[in-house]
Every structure is written in C-alpha cells, then in structure tokens.
Image 1 (tube, rainbow, N blue to C red):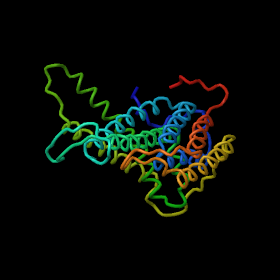
Image 2: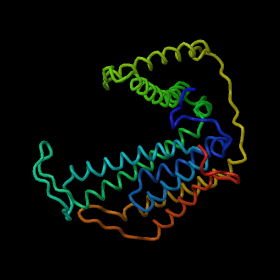
Image 3: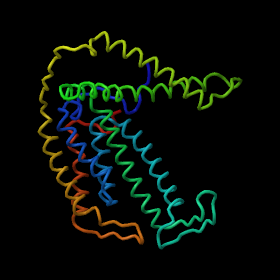
Image 4: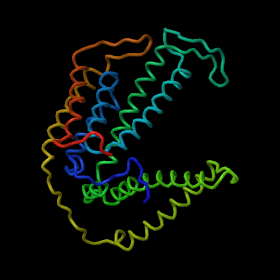
Length: 296
C-alpha cells in the first residue's frame, strides 16, 4: 500500500470535511490572515495553537504534526538568519567579528526577537495550509469555481493533487535508494531530482490524456454543480465571521503594539488578549461529541 503524504487529503466524516467550502474557507481564512499579518507574539502563538486544535478535531493529526515540524524548522532558520544578517538593535549579545560576504556580524536581542516573530508567522501559516490541504477535498474547490474560471480552477486542483504525490514519490525514491545495499554508490540530490522530475512528467502526460478523454478541452455545455448544505455550515459560518472580525480589528488597532527596533517594546493592551482568547477557543469549533484526540 502506497504511503500518502502527511498533507494529502483523506476523506473523513468529520466537521471540516463534510461542511461546505465557503464557511470552511472563511473559518480557516481568519486564522491564515492573522498568522500571516499579525505582529503580536501572543496572538500568533494563540492562533497557531488554535489551528492545531482545529486540525486535531478534524482528524488531521499527521498533517498538523508535519506542518509543525516544517514550520518549526523554518522558524528556527529565520531566527538564525535574521540574527546574523541584521545588525540593527541596541542590545548587543555577541560580537562575532568580520565574516565573508556578511561583513561585521553583531548579534542583537532585537534581531532575534524580530526573527522570532517572523518565524511564528511562518509556523502558523504552515499549520493552516496543512489543515486545509488535509481536510478540504480538491474536487470541491474545482466544483466551487467551475463556472467562474474553469481552466484556472482545474490547474489549481491539479496542483493541490500532484504536489502531495510528488512528496510521496520523493520519500519512496529515497527509501528505495537506501535499500540497495552498502556496496551501491550513494544517490546524490541531482539524481534524485532527475528521477523525481521524470516521474512527474510521466504522470503529467497521463493526466493530460485522461483529461482529453473526458472532454475537458472541448467546448460546449458543461454540467452545473449544486452544493449540498451541511449541518455544520452554520457553525463554521458564525465562527468564521466572528474570527474574521476579530482578525481585522486586531490588525487595524493592535498590530503596532510590538516593535523590535531600535529597542524591543511591547505595549500590552486589551486587544491582544481578547484576540488570543478568541482564536484559541475558535479551534474547538471543529470538535464534536465523540472526537478522540489521538486519531491519525
């Protein structure tokens, strides 16, 4: 049995998977908005924890864990790079001398704090994208925008389908390379990329042939899809609307509370804790009676 990518869509009878696309997009879009644009560390941490809770409630444990690992790696990388590249800030923690290409490197507390905020944004955004990819059926996205931009919708749907397959192929090729025995020559990144590209091109040709047989390139009348409402639509619509209002209010009135340069300053107002509590509690919207935290 071929092992699926952690962020690949898996059909489940959970709240996010069975709800309509628009309420789910509004709900997760509020998390994506605040994780991508907010500068308040408290709000960023709360939104990340909230979307982790939402992912666990939807049965997307593997996608959440994978996104956390990838987001954590990106966050750590951004902290290190920003600390080495940016010499701004009044609180110098270490003077590392002159480096090639970088010049004089002074590690400051302000640069580390700024990199940490950027890293928190990256981590939260990765978790939201992972939950969306694992819980929202790409075919439903195609149906939703079929009448507006049919070709663009088909392209986006194919990308959302084929990217997890490419990740699975990469893992499969890597496992096959390690099982060849100690006497075999090691497989470099160039050879891995060549094999992955060759397999992706073969799959693209097969997909194009299948689409041609199904008449996607022909003109004429097309079928109209009627969305079937779900009993969870009202829940996500209400929660998504409230969270979107909170996110917009936090970005409009509270995003300037935290400043890293020239010195670290954090004006702790009322908007930050309110937004943090809202996004933290909002993660439980995906849960229903009978949810088990440890499901895959």
